[in-house]
Length: 390
Image 1 (cartoon, rainbow, N blue to C red):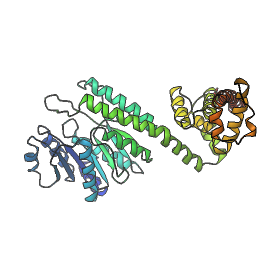
Image 2 (cartoon, rainbow, N blue to C red):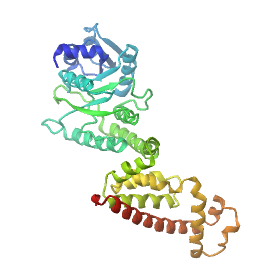
Image 3 (cartoon, rainbow, N blue to C red):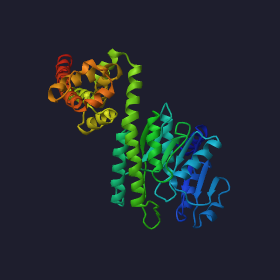
């Protein structure tokens, strides 16, 4: 794109450039000057810098500057910057780090990618992490982050840690729970959960040890990120995946669901059959309250079809529960001593509590038997209607 075309697009799409900074006086001026070649729509958040940052910023009266009295973390600075951007009427914000690793002349890459899309999206700069000069710990951290982002959203990216991003300000969450480096993980995961596309765009990167000042604290920040990912994974398994499945199922007819989510879903017929068997086994097992978590976790662990496993686990939905309990108690009766004429009692969870061993043994036998039959029937059915998937 020509420079004038980029400038016009930035104006028409209401894009601003957000620069959070903390003690980066060596590189800040170069970054701001580079951005000014494209636009004056700049917001700098001075996150309590104690160096000459404030003096440098006095030379830029044409841009918006937020001076924070003390350092509260990059996440907090970005949140305040987003709020300011929306107050000024912007719809998008391109964030660029002030440590000199990002090139302002990559701004057109984000603008052009935005113009090519028919819907609002979140763009993340894809750095070449294999080039010379990239610290090994940064490359490892990026791969680690990429894996968990995929697990939590189903979206595969090559770079999820780059701070060079374009945010759709009216599509990102309004409230956040993390204030520091982990914020950039929280925001992309929760934005993806809102069904906003998240994609990579290629950018350049410069790692200059003489200029770059990193505020990342390996132990503390990695611990905070690990805790955040644990929470996000739990929410993914217990809420996001079931929610997405239910929403998709509601939008489809049963025939379309079978065709797209069963016959045309990923995996061989054998994998699909094992997925159904796993779901049925967990659904009938005495693990009330943990069925969804266990089903999705085991499906991921054994690389099975998560949708089919989840659907099959719902064999124990409320109308069937009394029959499942009765069958479990009946099957387990021959294996325990004492009263087994439970049919004369009211069928409730108090009865299960009083005959717990009988129920557990019976439910495991029931789960094993029904899951095996379900898996075999599923395999034979798929092998007949879709033999090419073997």
